[in-house]
Image 1 (cartoon, rainbow, N blue to C red):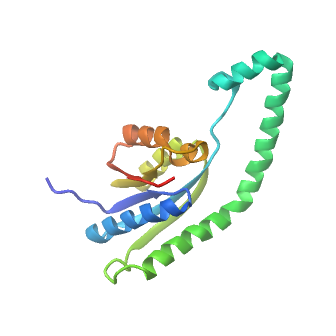
Image 2 (image 1 turned 90 degrees about the horizontal axis):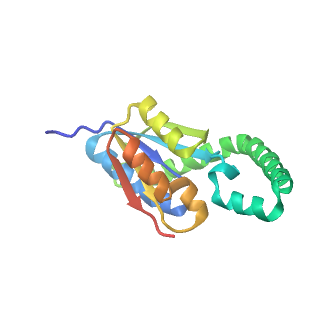
Image 3 (image 1 turned 120 degrees about the vertical axis):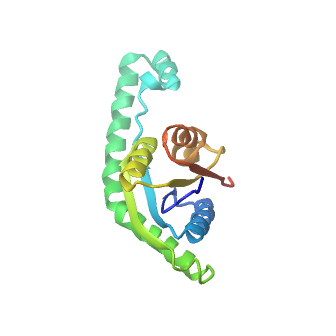
Length: 180
């Protein structure tokens, strides 16, 4: 059985660790003469009391009305943040372009020919967006980092996200450990 990798989907959270993961994607792309699509997802996962055990505890402590008011305030705050995220998308795209260019200039000449097919910045549920993009780009391999430390990194590249992508992708997934 011969493995043919022509399209790689690289998932990033723009941390320093993800730059190291990108180097793995570049190495594989160089070995297989594959192209890379870079993906960044703004996480818009719902955090309602129904799916959040802490929400039930807060509701019990504050009462239903106070908890509902707090939830509405959080939704409004999230809405304002998402509007801000829309304006950040071009900035994120430029950061990904720079990551790509920096890697090209700092790699051996055989790997500097790596083709970045596309840079995608989107928002939604991280796992869903990764799976949709993987299917849409018809990638042969997904390369992503994973980190078991910290609540914020868990949202984008944490254990749950990596596990779900690994289980549902339908294509091989390379999980590269990232430092804290």
